[in-house]
Image 1 (cartoon, one colour):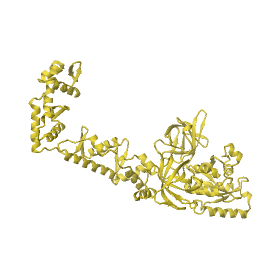
Image 2 (cartoon, helix red, strand yellow; image 1 turned 90 degrees about the vertical axis):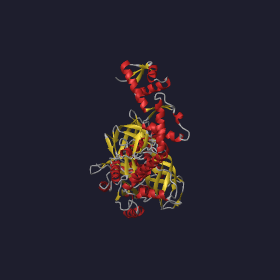
Image 3 (cartoon, one colour; image 1 turned 180 degrees about the horizontal axis):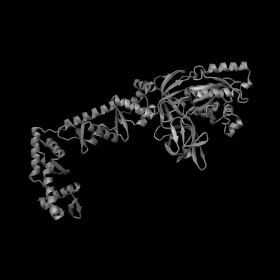
Image 4 (cartoon, helix red, strand yellow; image 1 turned 120 degrees about the horizontal axis):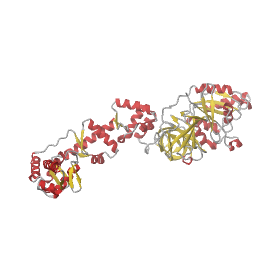
Length: 634
């Protein structure tokens, strides 16, 4: 079922609230001060049963200039607006400002309602209609139907109701499959239930027992109860006015301007890249770093505008800008916003968010301008590819990519498959999917093979390079998990071989020169003269070949010919095998052995016998029981 939000707009005391009461039977002014003063101060809400059987939600906004920030908050999620102009007064200052705000925030459909027609003559009414048509020219209301209404007498209400019902047929369906997002416009407590937040659900579906995250602040709570139009429901859909009872969230941790979202589906930011349209009615050019009031969703924060492609912005012009805000706001690509001067507080422009959590941008950079123009006008496939390129070596997950591009996760998944088919995508870590652009992966692979090639050239006798040394020196930007997955993918391709936390190019073979073969023979003989009383490595370096002998010695250790037990104790592999054989024979016949008995068995000293026994303990051949060793397994 299509869910619809209908809003009001217009100058103070032009009859918006009276019109909603006449249409719905509900009084939206709920504050005592509103009743006493006869003007709306806060947002008002009412359910609205349409003739076609659908239930719409109505948002009534205040018209007084002092409450424009409330009006902007009320526009969130509006599908169509009843733009109210009193027939006895005509177009007034907030008539024009509300129209500008609606246009900037991307409201697409509306009906012009000339109210209080019972107070004027027919001839005057036609003059007011012409004035309204002139004011709405060039806006989304330029071709909107015009209805003449008196909330007091009921004149024109049936015709207005029919026009509303007809226009709702044209409202587009909302994305109910996206992660839910609810900009909060009211917060209060109910005794026995706790914190309640209300707002227009602009995306997704929210269900009872869901977890929800408050942004900014990152407070996570459970959806205890849901109400739509005052009725308890199990789930609510995009396009509905929703009241959410949250557990585990204190009322002092929530305020208007916060957003309730599906956990980890959005992040708050203090910077936003945007396209800005400065209104032609702006009284002066907008200078770089001007302090402004930034309105998005239900939030209002102070900030400064950094103009990226112009020195300053003249009234009526457009520019690419970065807003740097004084408090965090939850934004994503495609969101609409409005800015007002810090003082005097007048609406001066607005536009669309191109990226909600960007890096700091430098002015007049061609690459920056090109990137932002792509994000503004690019096709979805181009946006996803650009997101992969920007993520670089750190990669990006599907949720973060959807958030960055403003696309649904299902759409992102389809686009990723298209990029994979074109050879432009590499996915790592199936349990925690992370995607790299194909060119980024190719650069990583080329860098790794080059660094390993350099290592093999410098140390031709070493089996390979330590994995952590390689990561720390050349791949520090890769998180450890991603580095492991990257290596795993290269192992699967047969490009590298990994053994004992070292890695090498699979094509690399250790080949000894004739001189090195002589050194190898000398070293092996030295370890086999007295196999159970070997020399220390330092005793083996002969003057003139010390450095080369160290390399050959290292190669013999890596290939397993020599077995290194400590910094200064190494045995030949044949000696260790023989010691193992003697030890096993003794244990099978005697059942146990002491260090002294093992020393005598090998005709060596305790200095060599004890490390060998400890080595066999580590191999789980033996285990220590008191002062003796026994077989670890029968």
